[in-house]
Image (cartoon, rainbow, N blue to C red; front, side):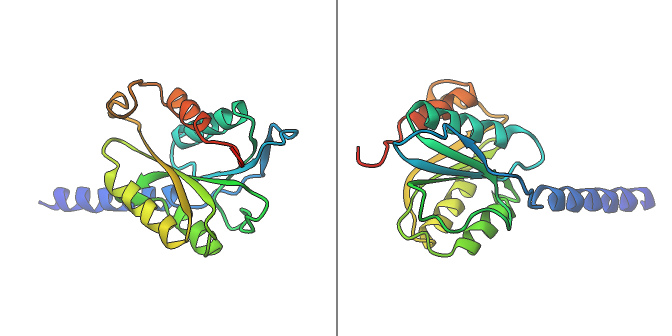
Length: 186
C-alpha cells in the first residue's frame, strides 16, 4: 500500500512538472521570411510546447504564406512578442493542447493584446487527437479579443489527419492551408 501511495505522489509531481514546463513561455527573436514581399504582412506566433511539432506546423504554415506572396514575421508567444498589430494584415496563433485547452502562453498573449480590432486571424491547435475542446476554447478567446477568425486548423500528432484534410503529412496540410489565405485586397 505504501508503494502505491509513493507511486501516485511521484506521478503527480512529474505530471505537475511537465505541465509547468509545457506552459512556460519561450522567448525568441522575430524571424523575417520573404522580407521584400509587398502583398501583405503576417505575424505568426506559436508556443513550441514540449516537442518540435507545433514549431514544425507553424513554420510550414509560414512557408505556405511566403509561397503565396506574404511577408512573414515568425516568433514565439512571450511577454516580448509584439502586441501592436497595426502593421500586420494577418495574425496566426498556434498552440499545442495541454490540460484540454491551448497552452498558457497562447492565452497570456491574447490577454496582453486585449482587443484585436477585427484583425484577420488564423488559429493552429495541435494535440494527440480530438482537439475539439481546445479549438473551441481558442476560438472563444480570439472571438472575445474581437478578431476576424479566418480559419481554425486543428492538427493531430497521434491520430490520422486524413479524416480532416485528406492527406496525412502535417507540414503539407499547413502549407496548403496557408496558400488559401488571400492577400489584402484580393
